[in-house]
Length: 252
Length: 265
Figure 1 (cartoon, each protein chain N blue to C red):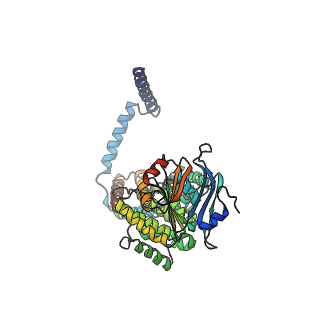
Figure 2: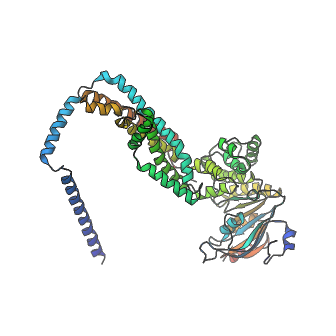
Figure 3: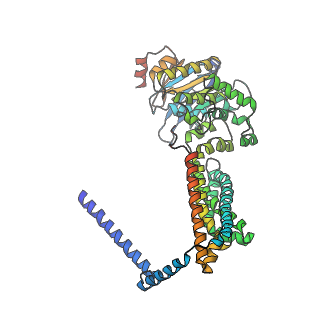
């Protein structure tokens, strides 16, 4: 069992968290610490938002939680809900600019989500199992993209691309989706649509952890709020615990 | 202070231009191009030669057409063989697919292949395959491999890091990463450079025959050596027409396939 620092195992069991960060320290160059002793539990089935100014370390934290970076001190634990799952598929990661393959169609981008479960020969021949193709189409249909499935991603609008990115993440059947500044490029109406979609999936038990610098987004859509400033968590609590002016004050 | 800096820079520039002129003059003198008598002699010979070119001898056209087709074949097959070999080798040379040590070793190899011009590869493969288009084709393929191999791994290295991260994040293998992220992201550049390579290889194949590696070059050289200038003109005109046609075709193809404006994310 991992050593706990600031968190006791009992509390961890109580909340059924999916991700647990324990006293995480991180630095890119070995001198300046971007993260200074982060303790965080992220739960399934809710929308958690990390609010912070640029440079507060929120993207770095997200990348550490996905396992793209490794902490110099402390640990990140992924809690499996069922045995035998591939860690990469439990935690899905959507980077800030989405990381979609622009020359591939929407449905092909979603199918990338199932690559790890098909063999080398099949992937060279591009012979995806029929069930996987149907599943990808079903997800896109549910996200309202049935008419855009076979269009290259480069021809889609901003909101449509965000849906494709979420669809690719959902293809993994993840328990947690980490999204970096996810809706920051969208207009308010499209943003609302995206959150309605995400809310549908939190109800089914998928957790979302999203970074943002916009307090109104947090006030409107977060179930749980984490505020970061200069590499430390300065506030953590349920929605409704803070007013927007208080958030702004905590942001510094 | 500022002014003296400007003056200094101008002086340096004047000195560099002067030095360059002196260097060129010495070079020209050294290879004998400053000899006026030589120039007038050359002009006379050139006049004689160009008179001998006309009118083009059309009897040789059927033979030459066959040789020209062979030249296009050498260029096409050589380009294709080189292309299909260059893709996996460029995979190996990219740090996305290979470890750094392997990638740099493969890059060194690609560099070595590229230093040998295609005509020299032709000579090498005439030794191996004997006279004929097989040697020319393999020769063109090797040069193409060296050239496209380098261009392609450079394109691969330039693929958006976020796309790689996102696709890696789903837990796929390195080969899957190359096939589903790197190749599609590089598709436009791959195609565009392939077409350029084909244009270049048509010209390279036209002289493959100089070393007996097939195609129209054999006749070009033969007519010069046997002083059959009217036949030579026919061969030159044919080569010119075909090269222009291929250039035109490939330019049309490029604009048809590739989007006019670069895709923005």
